[in-house]
Image (cartoon, rainbow, N blue to C red):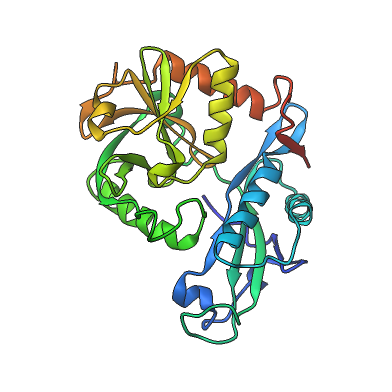
Length: 306
């Protein structure tokens, strides 16, 4: 991933030069992690560039802010328009889109409400998050020694920057030990999700995923895959998953806007299924990529053309 610093960033309602998008060192967000954000992709589809589930992402941004009592001064529709404007002015056909809202510069102290809410959108080229071959070959992951936050400590439904300190710890640990990614358990010791992805497994043709109450982010790609799986005739069950159940699953995979749909071939050096992308994972992967590349009818209006 490389930034094009000749481009533009949408910042508080204006498109400004990339290097001018700066904040003060005493901004509240720097000291207390007070920000919420989103990540989505614009795909160069067969019918032109289109952002996948743009409105759903911007609604979740607003919802995350609401949980933290942050009043983003833009509507969902205004944020969607700003994202499209940012993609257009940067002449992007395929890119990653990152909106962020944060508490800015005014005063310091844990109490945040006197600090202004700043909003920005950046776009850049970003390939497969876990590597291109991961989409076909799968990845090796480990169980993290770090757990997800308990529900009465930090709200996992908010896509907040502070939550991702937890993800950073698990990612640093997994990379240091030679893995691509890790799976985190929740406060009860059951499976939650990856460091930045939701988790699915397949057993006897049935697809399972942890419920929202398992300290996970209610991922938009997660919801997409659940809907597509049902459309294909699969049964999808949201239920509590113990760690050891993944070892004996037929297939397992991650989902996320960055990770898209990436197979898991081993956990803690235990091979999952055949140790490669399974047939149901491939079917879901092919179906997802047909949708996001507009090779099939967009019956759920998930694509916003630029």
